[in-house]
Image (tube, rainbow, N blue to C red):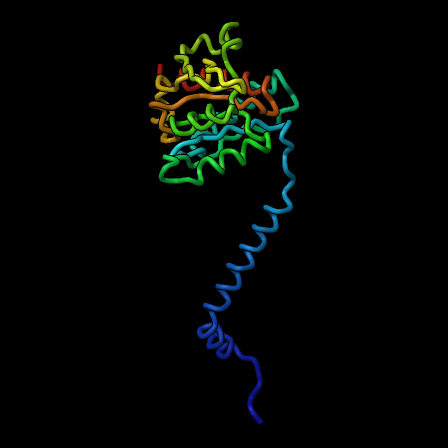
Length: 220
């Protein structure tokens, strides 16, 4: 009859042979727990969150986390219902090379969850072409963003009657060099734009002014 007693020597030999199997199982369990947490984590409603997409070939939203916290702090003074301000990457390069970029962009727009864009030229061209942007003419006329001297960006689109309409589509980000210095977003040749169907337009306007103020002060 074989010796079936459990000894420390037998345990060590078993672990020596099977440690990789146990390691894989532990990693798989941790991954499953993280996935379960992600799936069951309470989601902040769109009307209580300001979501800003960084539409560029590459971006690093983590570098703007402190800026987002300050934006939230100041915005809550105007609208206490806002619970989060977040930057997210939206990879966007030449649509002739990456045809999926405009499809993803329009899918994001269709949900109404996006409140603002920091957009490269490819992205803002597609936003204008799709008639997706809020004209900023009236806002700028009453002093929105005036302290930060962001140059206007005018664009043309064709309305339903076939007429060419010129409107203020965005504000140029070239002067906000701290975006590049933080390695967050390439600001040269990029624009700030607001979608027409955003959920929190008034709170977003406040948050974006706070953002511009923070980034401008960091350059002083």
